[in-house]
Length: 351
Image (cartoon, rainbow, N blue to C red; front, top):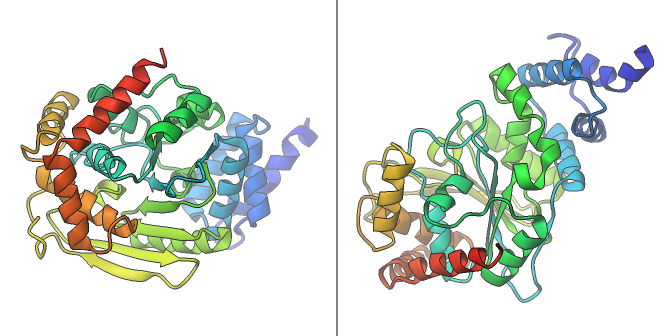
Protein backbone atom coordinates (compact mmCIF):
# COMPACT_ATOMS: atom_id res chain seq x y z
CA UNK A 1 0.00 0.00 0.00
CA UNK A 2 2.86 2.38 0.82
CA UNK A 3 4.33 1.97 -2.67
CA UNK A 4 1.11 3.32 -4.17
CA UNK A 5 1.47 6.58 -2.26
CA UNK A 6 5.24 6.96 -2.60
CA UNK A 7 5.63 8.80 -5.96
CA UNK A 8 3.68 11.81 -4.71
CA UNK A 9 4.77 11.62 -1.07
CA UNK A 10 8.29 12.58 -2.10
CA UNK A 11 7.01 15.94 -3.38
CA UNK A 12 5.05 16.61 -0.18
CA UNK A 13 8.15 15.88 1.88
CA UNK A 14 10.18 18.42 -0.10
CA UNK A 15 7.75 21.35 0.09
CA UNK A 16 6.17 20.52 3.45
CA UNK A 17 9.08 19.67 5.74
CA UNK A 18 9.08 22.90 7.67
CA UNK A 19 10.83 26.24 7.69
CA UNK A 20 14.38 24.93 7.88
CA UNK A 21 14.32 21.76 5.80
CA UNK A 22 11.70 22.25 3.06
CA UNK A 23 12.92 23.09 -0.42
CA UNK A 24 11.51 24.02 -3.78
CA UNK A 25 10.87 21.49 -6.50
CA UNK A 26 12.75 21.53 -9.76
CA UNK A 27 10.89 22.39 -12.96
CA UNK A 28 10.65 18.71 -13.85
CA UNK A 29 9.46 17.72 -10.36
CA UNK A 30 6.83 20.43 -10.32
CA UNK A 31 5.56 19.37 -13.75
CA UNK A 32 5.32 15.74 -12.66
CA UNK A 33 3.66 16.61 -9.34
CA UNK A 34 0.89 18.53 -11.10
CA UNK A 35 0.55 15.79 -13.70
CA UNK A 36 0.02 13.20 -10.95
CA UNK A 37 -2.64 15.47 -9.45
CA UNK A 38 -4.50 16.13 -12.69
CA UNK A 39 -4.44 12.50 -13.82
CA UNK A 40 -5.80 11.18 -10.53
CA UNK A 41 -2.63 9.45 -9.37
CA UNK A 42 -2.42 11.46 -6.14
CA UNK A 43 -4.93 10.85 -3.35
CA UNK A 44 -7.26 13.58 -2.04
CA UNK A 45 -5.29 13.75 1.20
CA UNK A 46 -2.04 14.17 -0.72
CA UNK A 47 -3.49 16.86 -2.98
CA UNK A 48 -4.79 18.90 -0.05
CA UNK A 49 -1.52 18.55 1.86
CA UNK A 50 0.52 19.56 -1.17
CA UNK A 51 -1.64 22.58 -1.98
CA UNK A 52 -1.52 24.08 1.49
CA UNK A 53 2.17 23.29 2.04
CA UNK A 54 3.07 24.78 -1.31
CA UNK A 55 1.01 27.89 -0.59
CA UNK A 56 2.75 28.44 2.75
CA UNK A 57 6.16 28.01 1.16
CA UNK A 58 5.21 30.05 -1.96
CA UNK A 59 6.06 28.70 -5.43
CA UNK A 60 9.34 29.62 -7.07
CA UNK A 61 9.62 30.54 -10.77
CA UNK A 62 10.94 27.14 -11.90
CA UNK A 63 7.99 25.50 -10.11
CA UNK A 64 5.54 27.76 -11.91
CA UNK A 65 7.29 26.95 -15.18
CA UNK A 66 6.87 23.24 -14.46
CA UNK A 67 3.16 23.69 -13.75
CA UNK A 68 2.80 25.54 -17.04
CA UNK A 69 4.56 22.68 -18.82
CA UNK A 70 1.91 20.27 -17.55
CA UNK A 71 -0.99 22.60 -18.39
CA UNK A 72 0.38 22.96 -21.91
CA UNK A 73 0.72 19.18 -22.21
CA UNK A 74 -2.69 18.18 -20.84
CA UNK A 75 -4.81 21.26 -21.51
CA UNK A 76 -6.69 22.53 -24.59
CA UNK A 77 -4.78 23.97 -27.52
CA UNK A 78 -5.44 26.81 -29.96
CA UNK A 79 -3.47 27.93 -33.00
CA UNK A 80 -3.50 31.04 -35.18
CA UNK A 81 -3.82 31.14 -38.93
CA UNK A 82 -0.65 32.33 -40.63
CA UNK A 83 -2.36 35.43 -42.05
CA UNK A 84 -3.68 36.61 -38.66
CA UNK A 85 -2.03 38.99 -36.20
CA UNK A 86 -0.58 37.33 -33.18
CA UNK A 87 -3.26 37.32 -30.46
CA UNK A 88 -3.38 39.04 -27.11
CA UNK A 89 -3.78 36.42 -24.38
CA UNK A 90 -5.20 38.01 -21.24
CA UNK A 91 -4.22 36.34 -17.95
CA UNK A 92 -6.48 37.30 -15.06
CA UNK A 93 -7.62 35.66 -11.80
CA UNK A 94 -9.93 32.71 -12.44
CA UNK A 95 -11.97 33.52 -9.32
CA UNK A 96 -13.25 36.67 -10.96
CA UNK A 97 -14.23 40.18 -9.86
CA UNK A 98 -16.34 41.35 -6.93
CA UNK A 99 -15.54 45.04 -6.34
CA UNK A 100 -15.10 46.83 -9.68
CA UNK A 101 -17.09 46.69 -12.92
CA UNK A 102 -15.21 44.65 -15.56
CA UNK A 103 -14.10 46.54 -18.67
CA UNK A 104 -12.32 43.79 -20.62
CA UNK A 105 -15.33 42.35 -22.55
CA UNK A 106 -15.96 45.78 -24.09
CA UNK A 107 -12.26 46.48 -24.56
CA UNK A 108 -12.05 43.15 -26.40
CA UNK A 109 -14.82 44.15 -28.81
CA UNK A 110 -12.90 47.30 -29.76
CA UNK A 111 -9.65 45.38 -30.19
CA UNK A 112 -11.44 42.79 -32.35
CA UNK A 113 -12.90 45.61 -34.46
CA UNK A 114 -9.33 46.79 -35.06
CA UNK A 115 -8.28 43.32 -36.22
CA UNK A 116 -6.52 42.33 -33.00
CA UNK A 117 -7.38 38.72 -31.97
CA UNK A 118 -8.15 38.07 -28.30
CA UNK A 119 -7.98 34.96 -26.10
CA UNK A 120 -9.67 34.93 -22.69
CA UNK A 121 -9.96 32.11 -20.19
CA UNK A 122 -11.65 31.21 -16.95
CA UNK A 123 -14.34 28.98 -15.52
CA UNK A 124 -17.54 29.20 -13.58
CA UNK A 125 -17.64 31.11 -10.31
CA UNK A 126 -15.04 29.57 -8.06
CA UNK A 127 -13.29 30.03 -4.72
CA UNK A 128 -12.08 32.04 -3.11
CA UNK A 129 -13.81 35.17 -4.41
CA UNK A 130 -16.63 33.62 -6.45
CA UNK A 131 -16.45 36.72 -8.63
CA UNK A 132 -18.11 37.32 -11.98
CA UNK A 133 -16.47 35.50 -14.92
CA UNK A 134 -15.84 36.11 -18.65
CA UNK A 135 -18.47 33.53 -19.65
CA UNK A 136 -21.12 35.27 -17.55
CA UNK A 137 -20.28 38.74 -18.85
CA UNK A 138 -20.38 37.80 -22.52
CA UNK A 139 -23.55 35.78 -21.97
CA UNK A 140 -25.03 38.90 -20.40
CA UNK A 141 -24.28 40.71 -23.69
CA UNK A 142 -26.07 37.97 -25.66
CA UNK A 143 -22.99 35.94 -26.59
CA UNK A 144 -23.15 32.48 -25.01
CA UNK A 145 -19.71 30.84 -25.25
CA UNK A 146 -20.54 27.85 -23.03
CA UNK A 147 -20.89 24.27 -24.29
CA UNK A 148 -18.58 24.71 -27.27
CA UNK A 149 -15.96 22.04 -27.88
CA UNK A 150 -12.43 23.18 -28.61
CA UNK A 151 -12.92 22.67 -32.35
CA UNK A 152 -15.81 25.15 -32.33
CA UNK A 153 -13.77 27.59 -30.26
CA UNK A 154 -10.98 27.31 -32.85
CA UNK A 155 -13.53 28.00 -35.60
CA UNK A 156 -14.72 31.17 -33.88
CA UNK A 157 -11.13 32.24 -33.31
CA UNK A 158 -10.30 31.69 -36.98
CA UNK A 159 -13.37 33.51 -38.29
CA UNK A 160 -13.78 36.37 -35.80
CA UNK A 161 -10.62 36.51 -33.69
CA UNK A 162 -12.19 35.73 -30.29
CA UNK A 163 -11.62 32.60 -28.21
CA UNK A 164 -12.77 31.97 -24.65
CA UNK A 165 -11.29 28.91 -22.97
CA UNK A 166 -13.93 27.74 -20.49
CA UNK A 167 -12.36 25.36 -17.99
CA UNK A 168 -15.46 23.15 -17.39
CA UNK A 169 -15.83 22.59 -21.15
CA UNK A 170 -12.19 22.38 -22.20
CA UNK A 171 -10.05 21.31 -19.24
CA UNK A 172 -11.99 18.94 -16.95
CA UNK A 173 -8.78 17.73 -15.29
CA UNK A 174 -8.14 21.23 -13.92
CA UNK A 175 -11.82 21.69 -13.10
CA UNK A 176 -11.59 18.69 -10.75
CA UNK A 177 -9.45 20.80 -8.38
CA UNK A 178 -12.13 23.41 -7.67
CA UNK A 179 -13.45 21.45 -4.68
CA UNK A 180 -9.98 21.47 -3.11
CA UNK A 181 -9.71 25.22 -3.54
CA UNK A 182 -13.05 25.61 -1.81
CA UNK A 183 -12.14 23.35 1.10
CA UNK A 184 -8.75 24.99 1.64
CA UNK A 185 -10.26 28.48 1.49
CA UNK A 186 -7.07 30.02 0.09
CA UNK A 187 -5.74 30.52 -3.41
CA UNK A 188 -3.28 27.71 -4.16
CA UNK A 189 -0.06 28.31 -6.16
CA UNK A 190 -2.07 27.12 -9.15
CA UNK A 191 -3.82 30.51 -9.10
CA UNK A 192 -0.51 32.30 -9.70
CA UNK A 193 0.28 29.95 -12.56
CA UNK A 194 -3.12 30.60 -14.17
CA UNK A 195 -2.15 34.26 -14.67
CA UNK A 196 0.64 33.07 -16.99
CA UNK A 197 -1.12 30.22 -18.80
CA UNK A 198 -2.59 30.39 -22.27
CA UNK A 199 -3.90 27.60 -24.48
CA UNK A 200 -2.45 29.36 -27.53
CA UNK A 201 0.49 27.72 -29.28
CA UNK A 202 2.84 29.94 -31.24
CA UNK A 203 3.54 33.68 -31.24
CA UNK A 204 1.33 35.74 -28.93
CA UNK A 205 1.37 38.70 -26.58
CA UNK A 206 0.73 37.55 -23.02
CA UNK A 207 -0.69 40.25 -20.73
CA UNK A 208 -0.72 39.15 -17.10
CA UNK A 209 -2.49 40.98 -14.28
CA UNK A 210 -1.11 41.21 -10.76
CA UNK A 211 -1.79 42.84 -7.40
CA UNK A 212 1.38 42.34 -5.35
CA UNK A 213 4.91 43.17 -6.64
CA UNK A 214 6.30 39.71 -5.71
CA UNK A 215 3.75 38.16 -8.06
CA UNK A 216 4.94 40.38 -10.88
CA UNK A 217 8.57 39.49 -10.20
CA UNK A 218 7.73 35.77 -10.29
CA UNK A 219 5.93 36.32 -13.58
CA UNK A 220 9.02 37.83 -15.20
CA UNK A 221 11.34 35.13 -13.88
CA UNK A 222 8.96 32.37 -14.95
CA UNK A 223 8.59 33.90 -18.41
CA UNK A 224 12.36 34.00 -18.77
CA UNK A 225 12.68 30.31 -17.86
CA UNK A 226 9.99 29.39 -20.37
CA UNK A 227 11.29 31.64 -23.14
CA UNK A 228 8.07 33.66 -23.35
CA UNK A 229 8.86 36.21 -26.06
CA UNK A 230 6.31 38.95 -25.35
CA UNK A 231 5.01 39.66 -21.87
CA UNK A 232 3.30 42.68 -20.33
CA UNK A 233 2.45 42.81 -16.63
CA UNK A 234 -0.35 45.11 -15.49
CA UNK A 235 -1.25 46.19 -11.95
CA UNK A 236 -4.90 46.25 -12.88
CA UNK A 237 -8.20 46.30 -11.05
CA UNK A 238 -8.37 43.35 -8.63
CA UNK A 239 -5.36 41.77 -10.32
CA UNK A 240 -7.06 41.82 -13.72
CA UNK A 241 -5.94 43.37 -17.01
CA UNK A 242 -8.37 46.27 -16.63
CA UNK A 243 -6.54 49.56 -16.22
CA UNK A 244 -7.93 51.82 -13.49
CA UNK A 245 -9.03 55.37 -14.22
CA UNK A 246 -8.82 56.44 -10.55
CA UNK A 247 -5.03 56.12 -10.35
CA UNK A 248 -1.92 55.66 -12.40
CA UNK A 249 -1.41 52.09 -13.57
CA UNK A 250 1.95 50.37 -13.19
CA UNK A 251 2.97 48.19 -16.13
CA UNK A 252 6.09 46.59 -17.54
CA UNK A 253 6.86 45.50 -21.10
CA UNK A 254 9.43 43.11 -22.48
CA UNK A 255 10.23 41.60 -25.86
CA UNK A 256 12.50 38.66 -26.68
CA UNK A 257 13.60 38.32 -23.05
CA UNK A 258 15.12 41.80 -23.01
CA UNK A 259 15.03 43.70 -19.70
CA UNK A 260 11.51 44.85 -18.99
CA UNK A 261 10.68 48.52 -19.42
CA UNK A 262 8.57 50.08 -16.66
CA UNK A 263 5.57 52.15 -17.74
CA UNK A 264 3.39 54.42 -15.62
CA UNK A 265 0.10 54.93 -17.43
CA UNK A 266 -1.56 58.16 -16.28
CA UNK A 267 -5.29 58.53 -16.99
CA UNK A 268 -5.15 62.08 -15.59
CA UNK A 269 -2.63 63.27 -18.16
CA UNK A 270 -4.75 61.84 -20.98
CA UNK A 271 -8.11 63.16 -19.83
CA UNK A 272 -9.53 59.91 -18.51
CA UNK A 273 -9.36 60.36 -14.76
CA UNK A 274 -12.54 59.30 -12.95
CA UNK A 275 -13.61 57.06 -10.10
CA UNK A 276 -13.61 53.37 -11.02
CA UNK A 277 -17.14 52.05 -11.38
CA UNK A 278 -18.22 49.66 -8.64
CA UNK A 279 -19.49 46.17 -9.39
CA UNK A 280 -23.11 45.82 -8.30
CA UNK A 281 -24.82 43.05 -10.25
CA UNK A 282 -25.02 41.42 -13.68
CA UNK A 283 -28.26 43.26 -14.37
CA UNK A 284 -26.73 46.68 -13.67
CA UNK A 285 -23.53 45.82 -15.54
CA UNK A 286 -25.54 44.68 -18.55
CA UNK A 287 -27.34 48.01 -18.64
CA UNK A 288 -24.05 49.90 -18.32
CA UNK A 289 -22.35 47.80 -21.00
CA UNK A 290 -25.14 48.13 -23.56
CA UNK A 291 -25.22 51.86 -22.90
CA UNK A 292 -21.45 52.03 -23.40
CA UNK A 293 -21.75 50.31 -26.79
CA UNK A 294 -23.90 53.31 -27.74
CA UNK A 295 -21.02 55.55 -26.58
CA UNK A 296 -22.92 56.65 -23.49
CA UNK A 297 -22.92 56.06 -19.74
CA UNK A 298 -20.41 55.63 -16.89
CA UNK A 299 -18.19 52.96 -18.49
CA UNK A 300 -17.35 54.90 -21.66
CA UNK A 301 -14.21 56.67 -20.45
CA UNK A 302 -12.80 53.48 -18.95
CA UNK A 303 -13.40 51.54 -22.18
CA UNK A 304 -11.69 54.13 -24.39
CA UNK A 305 -8.75 54.41 -21.99
CA UNK A 306 -8.27 50.64 -21.79
CA UNK A 307 -8.75 49.99 -25.49
CA UNK A 308 -6.50 52.89 -26.45
CA UNK A 309 -3.67 51.65 -24.24
CA UNK A 310 -3.96 48.08 -25.52
CA UNK A 311 -4.11 49.15 -29.16
CA UNK A 312 -0.81 50.90 -28.51
CA UNK A 313 0.83 48.17 -26.43
CA UNK A 314 -0.13 45.52 -28.98
CA UNK A 315 1.47 47.70 -31.69
CA UNK A 316 -1.80 48.00 -33.56
CA UNK A 317 -1.14 51.74 -33.41
CA UNK A 318 2.13 53.67 -33.40
CA UNK A 319 1.51 55.60 -30.19
CA UNK A 320 -0.93 56.00 -27.32
CA UNK A 321 -2.77 58.97 -28.78
CA UNK A 322 -3.46 57.10 -32.01
CA UNK A 323 -4.69 54.18 -29.90
CA UNK A 324 -7.10 56.45 -28.01
CA UNK A 325 -8.33 58.03 -31.24
CA UNK A 326 -8.99 54.62 -32.78
CA UNK A 327 -10.74 53.38 -29.66
CA UNK A 328 -13.02 56.41 -29.79
CA UNK A 329 -13.74 55.77 -33.46
CA UNK A 330 -14.68 52.10 -33.00
CA UNK A 331 -17.00 52.99 -30.14
CA UNK A 332 -18.56 56.13 -31.62
CA UNK A 333 -19.07 54.59 -35.08
CA UNK A 334 -20.81 51.54 -33.67
CA UNK A 335 -18.13 49.15 -34.96
CA UNK A 336 -17.70 47.54 -31.54
CA UNK A 337 -21.46 46.90 -31.34
CA UNK A 338 -21.44 45.46 -34.86
CA UNK A 339 -18.60 43.12 -33.84
CA UNK A 340 -20.71 41.84 -30.95
CA UNK A 341 -23.61 41.21 -33.32
CA UNK A 342 -21.33 39.28 -35.69
CA UNK A 343 -20.15 37.09 -32.82
CA UNK A 344 -23.71 36.46 -31.65
CA UNK A 345 -24.74 35.47 -35.19
CA UNK A 346 -21.77 33.10 -35.45
CA UNK A 347 -22.69 31.52 -32.10
CA UNK A 348 -26.30 31.01 -33.14
CA UNK A 349 -25.07 29.01 -36.11
CA UNK A 350 -23.35 26.54 -33.77
CA UNK A 351 -26.63 25.22 -32.30
